[in-house]
Length: 259
Image (cartoon, rainbow, N blue to C red; front, side, top):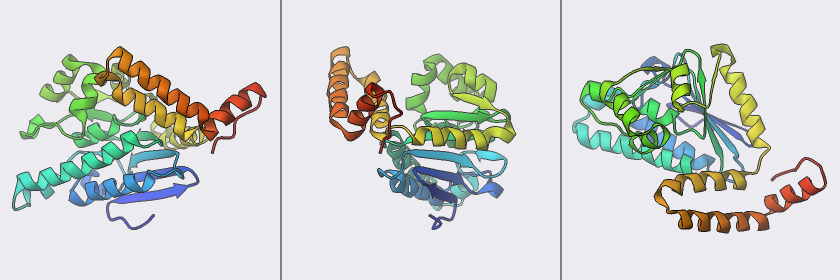
């Protein structure tokens, strides 16, 4: 997986690793990066991939949109709409794939970088990482699904604080707010991400996809609708090869071997 200009994408067994690779531009998102990110997400959305790890090259995770790129476009609005649409296509694919998405936030995550970071199913942050919305600082408004995820993760009041004041959160603060799964030492982030990825690669992709699907729908459903979704999905899982293997392994008191 080497045919990318702004990303490094590698596949090792069931684990795909996507690195935002514009370190000289703080991994800022231009039209090429978001287009490639959407393509990489689609490429990972197969049964062969059970885990996707997303991180950044260099000191930054992602500083958000590349404002120099935006400013040079003949029509800024049309250009940014295309960039946002490609980013949103990538995020939708990550959210709905069975693979567990791990974001390993190695440095500053601002704007769309913040938005991308917190869409991970599991979010690891280096101790030196920071998080800020930064959109209104340059007269823009949030994108990258942040207006969907942040209110669900931390509530409306805290979301408004982040979006309106551009408050910067440290990794520890982001963890206390519920935005980060785990904070690790800077020099341990890559190893911890690999360890967690390998752990998740031994689990059932279909089961993990079911968890993601249930939680993605939960705020839009009433109680009975959500319970019906639960009962239908668990019945499907019980008939699946992984579901049968999991139950049989438990009864036989052995470790399951999921596909």
